[in-house]
Image (cartoon, rainbow, N blue to C red):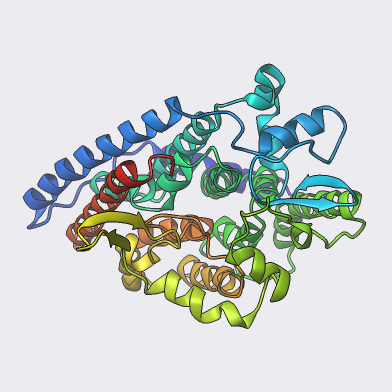
Length: 434
């Protein structure tokens, strides 16, 4: 046991030393073009950051029901006394927030000070997303990604993926949950790569699950990242069993908390309350009809979701007698491949164990998403459920993008940032509250 402990400590120390080593940059024939693209991308990023700050400053209270749930917890209740969105459930004469509770716990200190009128959720979302970006910078160092490539990957995550959208919409309950889940799942990956702290990594996956249920499927990928290259994937050695228990028990504890939470609210450990959602009169939409008449999961949603996840292009309508006036953005969003085309570079990924298990993890997460009654509506130029498995893809891309592919990454990321900039410029003109 002593030898194993020393080996683990030595490996952790080696990884931390590697994270401080500057990786030698490999020059390519298009470096000049890539630098020009970087200037363009950073300029558009600055514009998007300014828009984010304006949205933060202009946030109004009464938009995020996590403030109500935080207040309920502080007053010993599981039900809420009001609803700030259209997705609250009514059960046995009481209102409930149907979404998992972790973000509400995070908001409790702020609600304790400012009350349920707390209007700093976008600022919270910015802090969470900013922390996630710092985590990814550390991850790329550990994975020995060249600095130039790491900068482009950071831009891809920050402003060419749904992370920007859920951050600027952090005043909504759905988007705040994704910010929390993205940070905690990213931090779990960093811990197993850098410090091998499986218990804390498992706890963070548990928090991610208590924010976004789908993220529990990240667990096998996190486990694989923990393994050394010479370790078997499945084994019954003391080291394998200890790793499974350290990583899995905190997640099981989170599942138990969620089951008890469901039972305490609705009398059934598997009842999340979605069936009792009662939107205000006139606020019903197709999602409500789907949930009530078809079900939360159904093969009937497969084609719709597949088209919107992988095929649908950027959408904006034109109005007026001559169709020359801007109408509105498509609230069903733009497909992953159209809004974040850099994901296509993963096709060049090496067939290494983390890549293979990562691809299987993404497939396992996508399957229930394709059968789910919602694709993330409302959303503009994004498929925000993509954010649940973006941590896996980011690791795959980090292992894939070398100097030869960096120009392609630069072009695709710059294009994606530009499309985001166009999206929010149109939103500012046509729907300032979006």
